[in-house]
Length: 308
Length: 249
Image (cartoon, rainbow over all chains, first blue to last red; front, side, top):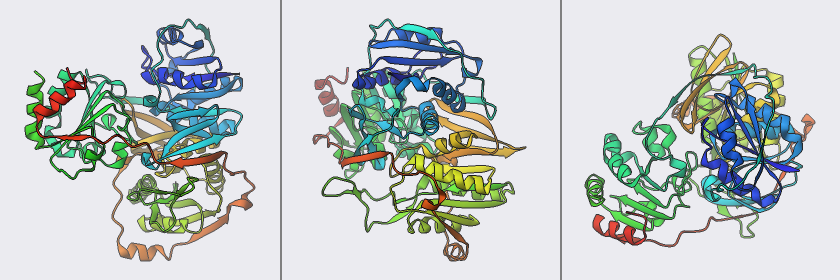
């Protein structure tokens, strides 16, 4: 038996979450296979084959994978599932949509957002917005899980896996892809950036003008709180927290963020946390390595100038 | 068009759960409980569909103990027409919940099934997708907007890179994200009226379905705490400290 990892990619490159899933999969000491489904899978399959410790890459090409739908990807995973003891992926929007379907049709439980694999079927995962860590054991014959990227190291290159092609099942007949609205940014990706600077609602209309120059100098990704996104000052895909993106950069700078638990749960594995807030009683200071009580509208231009 | 909304009775979102002394589970006894916030958004969306003349009947379904009736009454007060409680005392997990919901869907034949994208207690985020797979319908997860016409639902989904719009043939399963809507404030007269609306009780164990938990919880613990930090007095001092830590250029 082997392990199947569902690759996440943008058509040309693997997402970091796939390499983190490879590290998580090492817990089983079984051959690791990576499934790459795409319209043109060649480049991504080559990259997957070069990851250390990967035994096989399964390449599946079909036009309907140009914008993968959960209905189609789950049908593909189910076609392959019988050969696998473990089916896993990073905890991404695609995997969160696909793997519960796979688990249900295999009649097995699924584990979401696993942060630690303590034995081949024992897992630690956060519950109650990260306020509690639960250790759970699964006795199902197939283990289906998503893993939190930031909890596992990024697997490096060094492998030379075989690449095999598999035919895709026919496209589903219930659901079709219509369009997308991508937030294009020249900043690093939030989930994998070494530095993240995030703002709260209090930055208001000045969210971008205050954070962007600093982010540019630090080659940082920009994040936002839920309240800030809800208020329309920042797009939804940069929301940091338990229900948004979980980050663990070298440096996390929280600006005007009070520190709601669901936000803290998404940042607390960061190496160094800095909090700048005008309210000395803000809960964020309890989690910060360095705290500064200051007026944001003065402190941020000062910080920007200090980085010159 | 009939709409079925699944609602879960959970610990109030403002309360940080205590852990039992033996570390076996969280202790929620004596705490304020309520409707899972994502499910409340799902109910609100169903009510808006009815107000727009798209939905004709809204059925709220919950699975759990007698206490879940409080959450069903909340859904009724928001505007659901009737409610079903699938009653059981056993620990529920997403697969079992999806199987139980499937029996109600097959009985009620709704065109749209709405659920929250996840429950704020177990944070699994699986039930909607599992239900969709078991029913063989299409799914639209993490919905931030939806539009129904000609037997098709268009769903704008919040994904990792922005938004994506998909078109799904009805019947369909849709899970709500935070920004789908802002649920209305419950007024006292609505709560009073909700008491007159019917709640049907079905005993889960009589449905002939295996919904026993598959995962065994071995223990729960508080997350590790970060080492205490220091306060600095100026931006200059902050920059100096971060340069010593080698996290700033």
